[in-house]
Image (tube, rainbow, N blue to C red; front, side):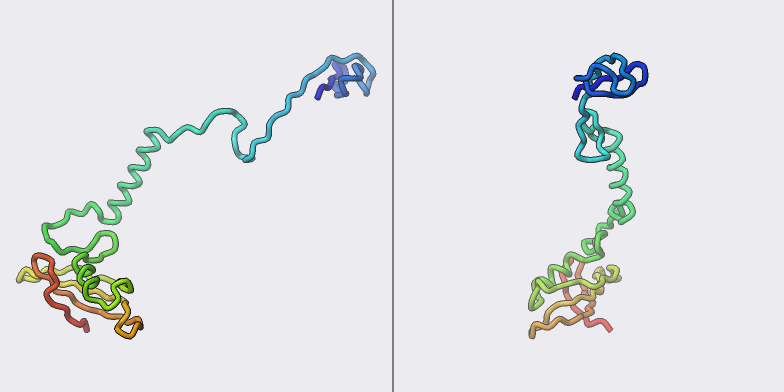
Length: 162
């Protein structure tokens, strides 16, 4: 849209008039450009693209990830023992595999809590697990068992925990 601006009073008038509608003096044409509205009110109106994180951002992500792993115990030095608690959820892989083979409905297994793996003087391991699973009748039951594992990680005995 073309408009004119009066050099004396500063009022704007349509360009067809060539004279100021307020004071009547001659005016020069003034071109006003339309500014495109951005779809996001907080977005920049410039044509610059968002820059990637770069080295600094990548370094920050790496530091946060390593800090998380340190806090969760993922960097703890593992002993050479075959049987150990997972640093993520405390589970014992060998016991989970044993339960998958022996439960009536393995897909119903849900661990409630795991005890710490204890190494006995005779080289065997003990771990307590409380879990929920379906019985033969299809009903859920909660069991607390102590699993005894040999030095190779095989379950050799299952005791009912008091």
